[in-house]
Image (cartoon, rainbow, N blue to C red; front, top):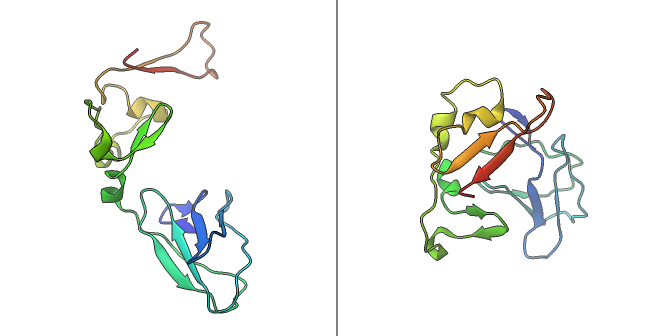
Length: 138
C-alpha cells in the first residue's frame, strides 16, 4: 500500500460485508485471510477509498489517491473525534495545501503562527534532542 510519497502505514483493509479487517504495517504490507471472489476495501483518512476484487493473488500493489476534501469531514479533538456538524463551538482551522508551500527544518515549525491559540515552545534545559510543549488554548 502506498501513495505518491511511498509506503502507507495504518491503512484499513477490510473484507467487504464482514467484520474482518487489518491495517498496513510501516512498509505498507498487510495479511488477511480472504477467499477468491471476496472484495477488499482499502481506506485511510485523507485518501479516497478503493475496492479490489481478490482473485487468489499473493500480492496486491496499489496506490491510494489523496483527497483533501475528505479531511473536512473529520474533527480531531483532545480525547476523541466527532463530525463537523456535531460541533457547536468555534474550532481553529488549518489550510493543509498552504503547509506544502512552507519550508521548515522541523515539522512542528509548520504549525507555528498558523492556528489561533496554538502555543509551541521548547521546554527548559536547552536539549536540542528534546521535544516541544504544544498547547492549544490552555
